[in-house]
Amino acid sequence: MNDLQRHNVPGASLRDFLMLPYAELEELNLRAKEQRKDRATAQQVGEERLRYLTDEKRIKAVTVLFSDLEGRLHMLDYDKKFLLKNSDNLTFDGSSIRGFTPQRESDLRLILDWSAFYWAPGDIFGPGKVLVFANVIDRDGSPFAGDIRGMLKKLSTDAYSKLGYTLNAANEIEGFLFQGLDAERRYHETGQFDYVHTGGYYHSLPGDPLRTFIDTVAEVQRAMGFENEKDHPEVAPSQFEINYSYGEVVAAADQIQLYKLICRQVATRLGMTASFIPKPVVGVNGSGMHTNVSISKNGKNLFWDSKGEEKISKFAWEFVDRILTHGNDICLMLNASVNAYRRLDPHFEAPNQIKASAVDRGSMIRIPIGNERSARVEVRSVSPDANPYMVMLAVFKTGLEGSVAKTKNLRQADRFLPDNIYDAMTNFREAAWTSKLLGDDVKRRYADLKQASADRCPRLLGSIVKAQEVQFHHEVYNQYLWNQF
Image (tube, rainbow, N blue to C red; front, side):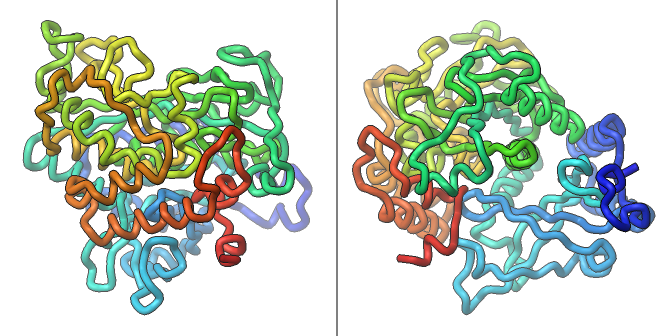
């Protein structure tokens, strides 16, 4: 019996859409994940997925996912029969996506990344649907410059084909759960967010709203092959964190987008709002997205060295030094909103010091305790509203290819990240390194989007969250409000 039948929807018995048990979903998604890890060829995976879609009569639509320049997730549902005939020619209007193309050159195409294919729980995403991520290409078939996922995929593919490197990442993504639907969009009316829970770190009783939300999200993630590790309430009231396993860098960035989508979808079904605004409430800890990274070759973790400083290798320390050198250059890529700079507040374990440490949680980079398998570097100064593909691109490309400053004691230097978006924009615009990361055109477009957000908000942060920094936040995008300017 499907959801429609359970709720006595008229005509539901006539519909026979795919609704798989969670255990079966997990098995299918883990099998697909293994193919991705084994780097099965695009042709092989594509043929297999198209054959599956053809044979599985209970699928009605394929949800195609892509991200804009700021990292906002976009989804298009294609009728399955249409997609099977036109999978190599899926066009859309790029001028309707902020930061993509002007109206005069609006046509763009989506190329399905069949390796990034997910079976989703029908009770959360609707019956009869599967999900697949896509890259964006230009009219002439070349990669679209504004598609950061495509840039990250190229970096990952080149690192593997030229150097044998597998780029690995896992993220600890914090968020808040607030009372009511659309709490962010209604913030300018209420001027406040209402907690659903005030228990604090690790404390949430079975069956309370926060625990119910966390448990439900964890179940959906498990079914979608996330391979969960642990979940818990965080330090601030109504704050949560749900951790899952390491993955290859593009898959890891895809999972960030899915994680946030799942959280929002589950919260909505519970009559609440999941928010990834970094510091929605002043006076309590903000939300971060600690980004754990490592590089392996032939199955060996290149960041591990049992005799190295803090038990990581010279290669890993060089990676760290390059990120520290360019810390201010890339800050806008890791902290993408006006509100993100509220989080870089030293009173709340803010990771705003441009240094590396094994113990000091105020450091931009932390070296966690690890072993041969788990040795890694943790970039702590990342906000959860940043474009995950841009974060991974900035961290890995900088760590591998950036320069190293001749600053004495670089890893302990008394330097700080910007405490406002204006300084971060100046650093970003003036840095030669960010032009190498993104190219001049995309760099300009991204900076212009950040400038537009900043210009619509009070210049000084002050001590209270302003309505505008929520209203004009890129994840709470409201075209009607933007067009009032």
